[in-house]
Length: 471
Image 1 (tube, one colour):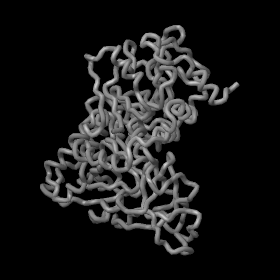
Image 2 (cartoon, rainbow, N blue to C red; image 1 turned 180 degrees about the vertical axis):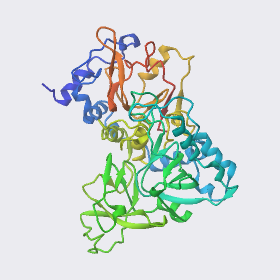
Image 3 (cartoon, rainbow, N blue to C red; image 1 turned 120 degrees about the vertical axis):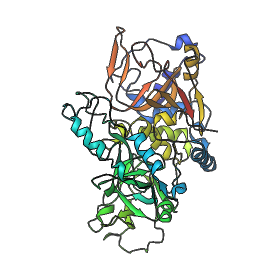
Image 4 (tube, rainbow, N blue to C red; image 1 turned 90 degrees about the vertical axis):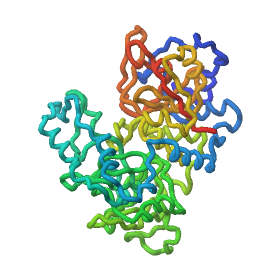
């Protein structure tokens, strides 16, 4: 029988005060979910919000950073973090060395064997063709920067190809040519074109990679860079929102907008005037970028239904919102580099914080060491005692990094830090001491300390950094 939430919390909290570290490294049992330390109650965000309410009154809704503080932190990110690109500064001519440097730092010829979707080895001739498609010899000595807006969610690729490749013949998820994704309204600078003319190498504020040119509309720098500053606006606060279907304007019909995407609102749209053949009173009339047949940019009205999750401002950065936003992705399939119409671990935490106006670098390697955030760095010199002490002092919203992975803390329960993260799977010790592997392959809730990194080390042993989004 499922216990009422308040009773379940009371039982879990009983006798947890000031446990010594040794006592906190307890023996775990694996419940019916098959994931260590997680029963059905813990899959409800209300459980973790109620846990916060056991502390100081109002703690769940206390604003961690207000809008001014967030703006200041974002400004620091753009000033200090070398992984962030200032598109405004790229308005001058781009020289060959700069463009070649961007491409060659990403699009290195694979040095290890690759396999296709059927588990067959990728032929050397196919790799040769992909490398040749970079068309590096065609990069001019100098070129004017071209600006564009993304018009549809689009994959960012290592090479200008849709071919999926894998590191082993039994892997079908981690496409080694998949880098990230761009979303409608994202600004880019176009730096180069593939040999077949179907792909562009673009620089976005957080990433530089290859994207299909059909997803980019070219405009002036003022149009492109000004789009994200338009007001009033709506921010998508659900995992995703979808515009209304319309045959009149296919470019904005049933367009997916992911969490944190910001779109301008046409507040002066005349009452009663149809939007693409439909009255707009049941929706928000928004403005979206559209690509003309010649590749140029124009803007078109679209309807974002009021039933779709959005707000007229960014969510307050509070612990309640961090928990609730994270749980909106619960169970979504893991998508390396935003593949499978999903996201990976760093994309997951980025989009949670983006819904509150907070910008983060794209990859875990950059997020973990960003000088713009409040970082706790760990090294091989840190003892297990110190690592456990830090783990048991983690707070809601803290980002915990191990090599290649990031998790967000959702609370401390019975002296144990719990996290939510987008992961291919979890390893932990079963009752017989043998390692159990749960292939969660999606957004997952778990305790932190019992997770195994390998046969000898735990996640706690391999923590490299903690990043705190707070004063």
